[in-house]
Image (cartoon, rainbow, N blue to C red; front, side, top):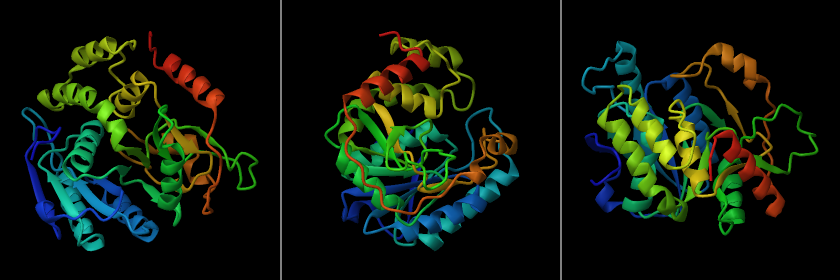
Length: 311
């Protein structure tokens, strides 16, 4: 299958890709690797939040690039992730990557597969550490409909990292997302991003997990940014959006709870510092008007400045 990823792709699960019949406009794409202790809770919340959407699963394998390492815990975790997929979503299409390609490359692979190969028009991408409220997917669909014709909206989500209580007067407002957790987008946005993602993925997959700092910096500078190679996870997709004059938009309300205490980059100290466990959890319906010119103009300007976009 022609994908962004340069790794071997294995398809398993209860559905064959050639016989898949797309039943909904929105596809819920689930990504996982080696954290089954988070994944099971998250995926069960996804199952409870579904209201007719199709689910497609993407699971990374061991990091087996040349001159690379893997931990025995990675192997055990990846195997457990596959078992959880079969248990919770036995009838869904499952893509098993042979390697741990990491989030930015996996995002490109997900969107390429969901939009270009499977024919969906909308996609909600979920990692393994955001527990959804029962109305998360329904609220996300509301935002997809609300902002579909607003070209400056690149992605939408329902987790604003808000610390205020549920009577917060800004609960029914939208804001820019400082993360890309639990975000959804449209095929016509992917059409704008595809070539940039191909260039980024070509660099990172060619080098495996070896450092490719200079090439990533050069790529970012060619896009007009200052060239900070540390921005290779959320930052890569964020810069691709900003390059296309788009921003990620989220509800102020936290329609989910972040549980990723420990991960590739996350640590318990950071989790506690951000007070994720104390954030209020909102389980209501969202209903707000489409934001106007002031919102998008100001947000685009601020985000471009923070990433050092020169034009």
